[in-house]
Structure formats: structure tokens, C-alpha cells
Image (cartoon, rainbow, N blue to C red; front, side):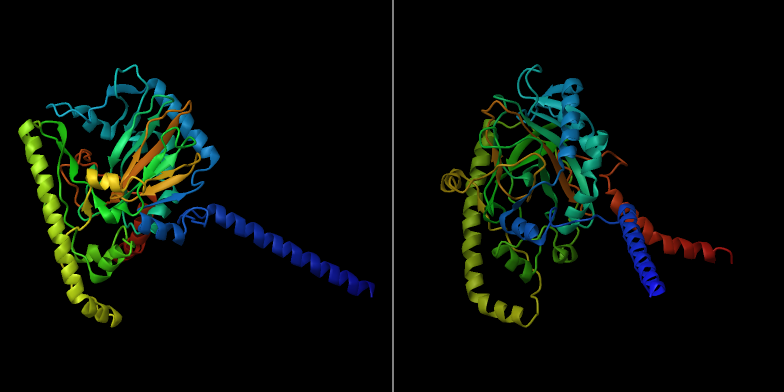
Length: 437
């Protein structure tokens, strides 16, 4: 009996030791596994993606850990004391006035709205390249995984900046959409906005109109003349790319996908856009702009009526076709979002949603979604790290104010480079084996 008891005890001890060894091995494998980003429900979930497609934005709480926020804030405070300060050139259309802005795409520069001694409003626009503590977060596994969850194939960061609203001094940011400033054809990418401080209605939190990426469009675009180095806002009516019946259905129900594989596969390569010479805007230009906007309104109304008539006449046929699983051939469809105007601004006054956020929270913004922020009227700062990404496979518009340096394209994510390198290894091994013949 004693021998049997001893044997049973030894067996139990052996099983416990084996279980402990297996758990230790599993933990070590998890620590060593850096090939793929780990996304849990606390980062990006299917509900986040659905909300983003429906509303044009989504807030993810606690995306940055407290330690990460503290690290980035220390970095920002160091930059404030040593960064080169310049006046913001966004409102200037004088020849040569945009040189500082253009150069900042590859530098770290501090922007002020008044005298150079006034508090900084922005620090940008190459933090993801030149500031190591910020770069490590911009190219983290979590950010890369977020891009993949939203359908991006080859995400590229084109700009990064710290948006600052000092106490009692932060300026008001007017209504805009990111596509006005960063343009790709077809549409791609999104903006990431990380709160570094508590963001409230008192200190100028971000505000958005839910689903405005489907309802409305801005009638002007921020365009850069790189030859004469000045910028201006010009009338701009964007046509939607060729899309399928399924994509049209997604748009009508608020389920617009960020990167549509159907759009990518059916849209022909856009022609190269050449830079043209522009003169600074005059009173005559303003009159032409107003006339163009009135024409855009008329064209939009006509397009909407024609679209509604076609939908009514062809709706039954389209539904039968969808039910049978046969997709219609892609066709050219005009963008029927309403042009944003003073009338829409009055009607949508109650639609604005304030995004109150804690440090570390992240909001993802669709390029079309309308957003703004008020001035900081509190005693507390409101700082945020913003990053904008686009699909790397698309041609880059030469009128975007950000341009890659010759021979230095926008950088790929390290995770994608590793994946491409692993995919090439079997081919390289096969070449080496065949080379001896």
C-alpha cells in the first residue's frame, strides 16, 4: 500500500511538472512571436470597424498605455523648447510663402499663428521619421494591425504632427475633411488622432458629424503649387471611382469600406496629374469660385434627381440580380453627397458630436468625415498626436502639399517588409540550389 501511494504521488508530481513546463514554453513563445500584430478586443474589434464604416469615425479607448502617453508627452515638452519656430503659412497665397510648409514634410518644425514668441499650435510634419519615441509608436504592431483590420494592403504614413491647444490660447479649427489636404484617387487611408491630455468641451475637444462622409462634401481643396511654392483653396468636385453594385449598396447603408478590393481591381490606373502654374487669387478669382460653387450645387441637384430616377426604374431588376448572386458591371457613378454650404451648416447645427477623450484614447477619422474643434477656454492644455495614412500602391497627386523626396518614397511598415522578405526566401533558396548546375 505504501508503495502504491508513493507511486501515485510521484505520478501527480510528474504531471504538475509537465504542465508547468508547457505553460513556461507557451509564455516564451508568446514573448518571442513578433511576426504578426496581436489584436485583442481592447484594441480593434469588428464592432469598431462597423462603427467606423457607418459613422465615418470610431473612438477606441485606451489604445495607448499610460506609460506610452507619458513618454510621448515628455518628448513633446522637449521639442517645445528646442524646435525651430515659424509662422503658419496656411493663409498666405504669396509666391514663395509655402516653402517652410513644403520643407516641413521632411523636418520637425514648430508653427505659431502670431509672433514667434507666442505658444506653439503645431509641431510637424515628420515626427514619424525623425523622433524615435514617436516613430516607435507610429510603426508599432498595434497600428499596423489596425490598418489591416480596416482593409489596407500597403499602409504608408505621409505626415505626423502634434496638434496643440495651450491653456486660454488654443485656436479654433474650422470645419474640414482630411481629403481636402491629402488626396488620393481612388480614395484611401484615414487619420489617427491620439489624445495626450484629457480632451473636453472646455479645452477644445474634437467634434464630428456622424455619417457626414456619406452625406456631405466640401467644395474646395487645399492645393499646392510646388513650382512657385504657394498654396490656396480651389473649387473642387470629386467624381467617385468605378464601383460595383455591392459597393453602391454599402454606401447607401453606411457601410462604405475604406479600401475596396472591388474598386482596386476594376479601376484603371489614373493618368499622371501634372503641376500647373497658378497666380495668387484675386477678386476676379473669388467671383469665379462663387460661380463655380453655384454651378456645383446645380449639377449636384441634377445628379441626385437623375440618380433617384434610375434607382426607382432599375431597383427591382437590381434586387433580383443581387439575390441571384450576379453582380452588375461596374459603372461610373457621380458622388451625390450634398455640397457643404451655409444652409447645411445651419441644418446640421445639432448633429455635431463632441468626442471627449482620456489620454491614450484614439479616434480614427474617415477622409470624408467633417470635423472641427473649438478654442481652448480652460486652464488645461489639449495636445494630440495625429498621423495620416494612405494606400501605398496608388499614384501620388502632384498637387498635394506633401511630396516624397526624389528616390525616397513614403516608408513601408517594417511588418510588411518582413512579410515580403519571408515570401522571397523560398524563391531565393530555389535559385541558390539551381545555381550550381
